[in-house]
Image (tube, rainbow, N blue to C red):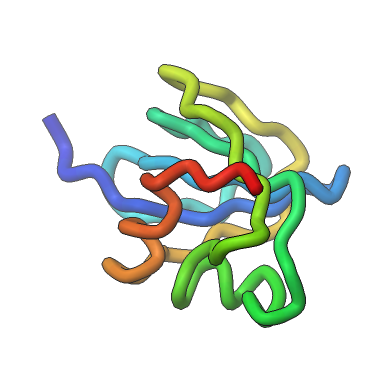
Length: 95
């Protein structure tokens, strides 16, 4: 099995998701994420979508429970998540 990479993905419909892809991130318009979560809201201190990939969600964010997998369409960006961000996303904060 290929190594899984933690990523934050945005979609054309303004969705922001976190999960794991097999191998390296892709530039395809469709992506399958394992153990996926969605960020419904994040406070200003997160510093935007790039902040969700760099440091992860903070208190005050709304992160859903994980689903086994999801296939996202109309992908607009795929960012590798830092180890710090992965730890924060895995907490599944819902404030």
